Image 1 (spheres, rainbow, N blue to C red):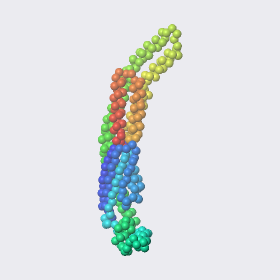
Image 2 (image 1 turned 45 degrees about the horizontal axis):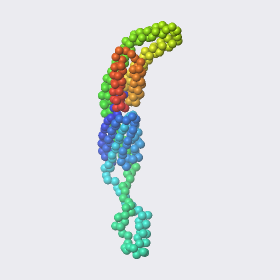
Image 3 (image 1 turned 90 degrees about the vertical axis):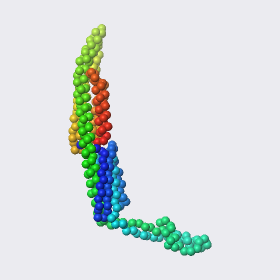
Length: 295
């Protein structure tokens, strides 16, 4: 099935405990490359979200960003860093003993020292966190569904363009077959003349004559190349009609078709064959460029 690798979706949801925002965008990539960005609250859910992306997308670079904000501000905890405070108190006492300082260590003094007093958000309780994570997974799944719809719509345009180019290549293959047939008569005439030339020599080597015949015949036969090209074009149609992602398989088919066209270019001799070979290579290159957008 033809799907584009490019797309974008954005979904927001208000949960009873938090507001959730999801954006997902995808661009071309040779393989599947998933980048996930989540808040600290959802860090433990990253693997699950990555798995959701892999269920929807087979190829492309996907960037998933999830934001969450609690509906009520989190409770905070204030803790005293006792080892640090004890060390500071000991240092002040030593300074007193040496006459280097006066006065006691006050609370305002402690607040001036980094990490003497630790303020941190209280962790969300397990039941609330599970509820938020479930809502996040549902929102991400909705965003990925929208992304898939967009990639499918774009894929319809790609399919139409690829079908047109494939039809052009198929027409060029048949024209090459006709050109090869038209050039066969000239090749047979040259082959006959060469055989007569060899036999006219005073001491003819029949083995050499046979080898010359075989060489000419091998050079003129392009039936295998044409058969394989027709088979590749039929396979192309089957792949694009299948529900499975086909971008990488189309890449491989194009490599094979280019190889066959190059071989035809070296062997075929019909009228206008060179122009047809150039046109076929140009059209295959257009197909290759467009296939880089297919999942």
